Length: 273
Length: 262
Image (cartoon, rainbow over all chains, first blue to last red; front, side, top):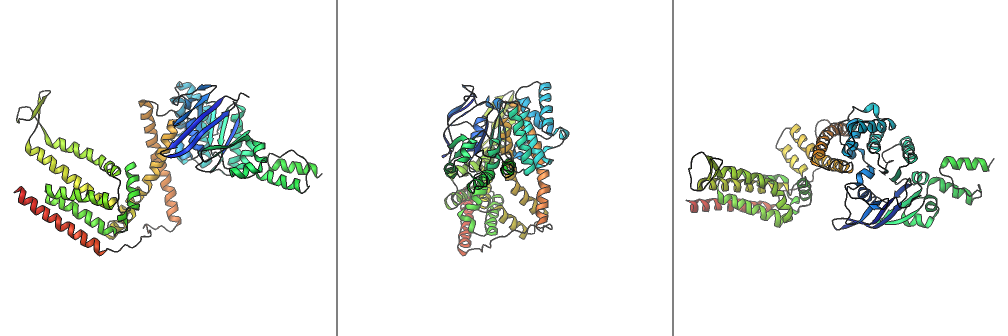
């Protein structure tokens, strides 16, 4: 993989006198699935807003394909789905909401309409096109927010805590949506507090702690490393906890770690036949 | 909107917050009534200076914040004062004039005096009212209005408006960030369109939120009246004495002003 697709170069950001991000350096490959973890207020959302060009860092830059990208161009390259859909949705109808980004990008009306329709159909919100978005359910609103960004066709898609406010079936649906974007070749960046979700979905985990990169590891390496988990304050995923326990007690013997509970059940069934 | 944030913070954290809200409101309103009824420059200056001193020195309001709070009203007052001070005529009627587009824009001593007087009156009233608003939370103010038998529906609207203006402002900020993230603020045209969207979006959001808040109120026994907990703050003797002294001095200033002014 091209490891220099998206580069965060020495980013520093402060709100007034409070340092939020200090010398952040990250390299992300094209098509990679990245999860950012860390406590609330660690600086993840601020970093996302910098990657999207909404915030200007006091120091550092963002490069794509080795070229530094100006702030006003970044929204064309990186789309962001915000955590709270009420704060993201601005237009009075779902259709206008999703058309908003493509039109601002300067797409002609026909292409903007086609992109909008495709994105809305993919997210199963086309039927609500004339409805006010604020009257939709939480899950539907979330899908409208994703359609917002999908219609813009950005190469990099950022999701700020996409599974918050969603029930388990909503989270499962979100997992599939993120996977579908990955399959289309998008570089998908997600922040979450859900270690089970992160373990199952991500290629790589980056932990931000007190405005610094506290860990940047391949997913399996990160979650196997008890010391690193302890240092960063991240919990071990449930299926690994159970798998480790079963292994320690000799109930199972294999070395391949399960990706989720279903896989763990399969391992147990296979070994205990 | 920062003005509202500042007001909210000071009203809760002010050292003057510990005093009885009704009494503070009475002092503020009585000062305003004196300024308007006496219509005297000396009284306006006295109330203005005393209010600024009390708000900044005793109420510990940051000077920059205080000037910012006064700023918005100040521009309107100055604009009104200019409108009062400058007259227009098609013929030359005063010495101090400018001829523009065939019209004479002129000022007279009488008009300038009137403009200064009205400016000082307005500033004095605003700063006197700030004494209450910078030291008393809105809940205490609405509680006083209830005790004054202001209709419950009006008090309820004041309560709700004030309570949710912050929620809407926060949402508006979020919408603006969202709009920026999709290049919605890149030029004047897109800003106008985004503003239209945000305004209509906020309106719809308010309607949907209103339903949810109503459900929340009903679920906790709401039957048309808002009952919040209010801490009892008795009227302190020192405060009464200080206020009495303040109004006595105000009357002395009025009398002295009358004597000097003839």
